[in-house]
Every structure is written in C-alpha cells, then in structure tokens.
Image 1 (cartoon, rainbow, N blue to C red):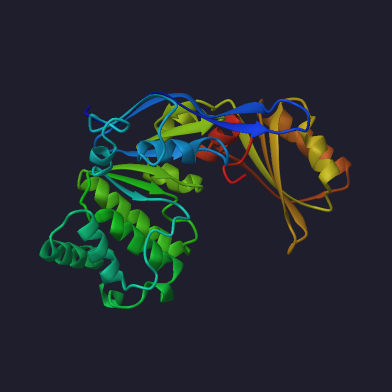
Image 2 (image 1 turned 90 degrees about the vertical axis):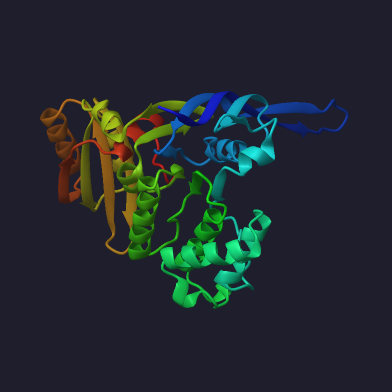
Length: 332
C-alpha cells in the first residue's frame, strides 16, 4: 500500500528554566513526543487517540508543519515536512480543534473565497470551488450570512469548507464533531465517509470512542508521548477478550465504596461518575474471570448497603481497550 504520511522516530522535547534565589537556574526537560513511528496509507481513515497531555496535539502540529520535531523525520507524500514545510503543507487540509481559523465577521462564501485566494486559486476558480463546497456541505442557503451568527455546527462546516478549498489529498480533522448536536455530528461523519470514498486520506482525532470505532480503518493510541497500540478497531477489541466489562448504576453508594471496588481481586480498574440529578453512581468495572468476579462485586456492594438499580455485562469496546492500556478514560 502507498504511504500518505510517514512518521519515523519523532521526538519533541520542551525545556523550561526554574529560577531560584542564590542558585543556578535549573533546566527541566519535558518529552511531549518520545520516539513515535507509524505510517498512514493513502485512502484510509486513521484515528489518533490519546488522553489530554499524551502528546497528540504536539504530534498533529508537527505533521502539519506548525511545530518542528526535536528529532526524527515526517514525510507527507514523500515530502520532508522539516526541509520543505510549505510544499508539504499544500497537501494537507487542516481543521484544528478550538482553532478560530475562519473570520466570523465575513460570510461563509467570503471566507471560502478568501482562503481560496490564499491557497493560490484564481478568482474564478475560487468562486466556483467555494460554491461547490457550500452546496456539498449543505450550507449554500446561508452562504451569504455572517458566520458570527451561525451555530457551532455551521461554523464547524465552514471551517471544514476552508480545509477543502485547496482540494488537498490529505485531510487532518482534529475533533471535527466536538460541540455539535447529535444530528449535526451524524451528518458530518457521513461527509467524512464520502471523502474517504473519493480517495482522500484522513487523519482523525476525536474524544468520542464510538466515532473513532465507526470511522477509522486503523487506530493508534498515544500515551505519555509514545504509541502504545496500533491496529484495526476490531483487532484491538479482540486483544482484550480476557477483560470483561460490567456497568452498574448504584443508589446509596459513596466514593469510599467505589474505592473499595478497586481493591477486589481480579478487578483491573474502576471508573465512576456521580449523577447529581438521579443521585446515583454510574460505575464501569473492568475485570477478569467472568461470573465469579461478578458475584464477588455484587456481594461487596450489597454488604455496603448500596442498592443496584441496573447491571450490564458487555463485550469489549474501543473505550475498554483505551482504559485497559492507559488506565483512564479518553475524556480525562
């Protein structure tokens, strides 16, 4: 398979000085990305997942040429991002999370035509391409309205439209559905799949595990600056078949009881969320050894005078893989 992006032993270190009176300044080194290597193939959707502070954002910025690596090589369609940054960037359309990359005082059409000109398109070509993209994204009826008045979903579509203006073969979509209502998120996912069918290569980051599972051909999980897993979603789920997932809804429980669950034999980890509206704990337990552990967990909870409102035992999900490998939820 042909490679769209090649990442080879990439490292990114940051340094900070700690000053103290009458002492020599101490230089601290932080390894944001620590020896990462992987390939992204042409025409695939590649999901990059990681908790906050794992090095994901730093890695994305290096791939797009916004940051230079301390060590290592990144190639975009064979072009070295460090040596030929501008040339490499022309092959990637980018939507970065939280990046106010469009002008809110302009209309959607004006935004796309403006960025088309920046990307080197002639005026007529920029107008025609902007019109096509507005139609494609379903926002042509509001194309001449000021972006500032748009919903979050509409603004996200305009930002995506901006990334599509140069017709780059690679799209980097950083949290593309973050903050969208469910229907807008579904619509945007369908658009992403359309791009894949047209042969575009897509690098996707998301905090929604179901989205990563649904869209991605392969998924890489990064934690503490290192890639700790890389495979097809189904293969990753099969890799932890020995780990079972149990979900409980408890009333009358406490954080002390939740902590006690973690000490039970063959319980791998416990995640909990307190629902203030219902005054219940929603608890996810990953454990080994099937039914015997389930009985042990329930006996413990009941002895502590907590009430079990709901119980579900589920097959491993991509979220379970992530928790198994990192010990934390993706949204932590």
